[in-house]
Image (cartoon, helix red, strand yellow):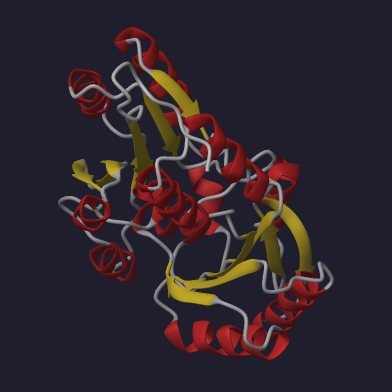
Length: 295
């Protein structure tokens, strides 16, 4: 184990920070000892703090009613308040695992605030979101408890990010196109009828949502996505994720396909978080893999 100490032999204090793109809510993050930044969700000129005063199930209900929520980075005041608190509480290092910079400007604002507070900030660029982001934050916090040095934690997380991928199968591109989160090629697909696009979110797309493939049906899209992961020769050194936004039946079908393709492998099944669902809309499916962090 690699650790650093301050004068007097006390371990250096490292804080782990993530945002609501992780799918965690404030209560869950607090229970894990992870500091939390809520992104903003705007519905009919009303602003909500994701995971604080609105939860994912409420967003699904709004989407069902035809609402078109928009999102924004965490309020500047909340970032400043948190970083000033961390400085006051004696933290030397902050490891932040925010929503990828390809989808949000949170990272650049955090850099500016950390500089103002004279905090040493390490930002993990995940090129992704959802459970990859959540998994990395949880692992980072476990390593902090083991008194592993911040630089070593960063290295281990980055090693895992280098072996990760996300594929997204939206029911339609209406929400993503309107939100401006697509590459131009992906946005152009939005007008094509009877096309079921498979989108990717990874280092190759610099954390932006790009086209991976296009097929005709949801079942073909599921099969193609799972086959693509199989071609990567994943094994027990990896952890898998299957997510859905309010389409549990389709999500369970995809989960079954993944379990058949990767028998015995660790697999998380859950919901696409509120902020991401605002952009994907209902009926979206996603799969992710990441190499397990060295613990």
